[in-house]
Amino acid sequence: MSTFRIVTTFFVILIAVFHASPSNGRKVIEDLVEIEQIGRKIFASRDGIPSTPLELKSKEEVLWIDSGGYVGALITNKRFVVTSLYSSSWMDKPLKSDETHDGSLLVSPTLALFMTKDRVICFDAMNPRFIEPNRSLREEFLEAEVNDYVAVVVSSTRALGFGTDGSSFKEIRFKRREIFQSIRTTQRVATVTTNFRRLTFNASSSFWAEVRL
Image (tube, one colour):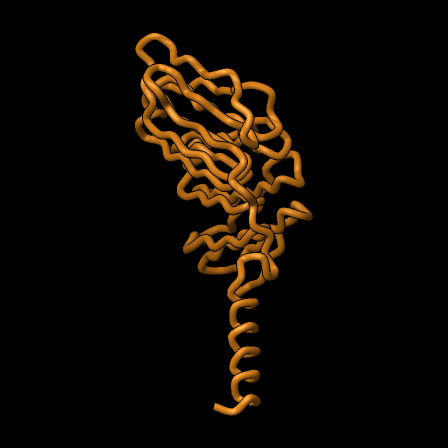
C-alpha cells in the first residue's frame, strides 16, 4: 500500500472518530451523584464525597431508585426523595398512596420528574428546588420526557416546558380539536407535535415557538 493511501486512510478514520465522539457538539455530563440502598438506608455520594445517609421511615419501602449526572432520585410508598450535586441535604415531597403506584419517574443528568395523571413534580438539580405546575379542573397529564437541561409535559389541554435556565413551567395551550401526537427532545429543546402544529420549547429562552402544519 502506498504512503499516500496510508495517510489518506488515517485521516478518514480520524475524521470519523471525531464526528462520532460525544464531545463533538454535545457536552457530556459526568455522573457525579450516585445513590444506593443498603438495608433501611439510602447512601449518596456527591463527586466522590459521601453525604449523610437517608433513613427510611417506618413501613416505608423504596419502589424506584435512579441516579446520574448531578441528580439522584427515589420513589417510596410515601414520598419523592431527591439529592443533587448542589444540595446540602436530602429533599422530599410527600405523595399519596395512589400516586406512588400509578406514577412514573424520569431522570436526566440535571432533572428528575415524577408524573401521575393528576400531578407533576419536577426537581431541578442545578438550582436545587421542586417545581410543581398547577392543574386545572378535569385536566389530565398524558406524557412527559426529560433530557439534559429540558423537561416537557403534555396534558389534555396544553404543553408545559421547563428548562434549568428558567424558574417555572411555561405553557402553550392547545386549540380546539387539536390532538397531541408525539414528543421529541434534545439537550435543550423539546418539540411537541400535534395534528395542527409543531410546538418547540427552548430551555435557554424558556419560550414556546409554533409552526403550523
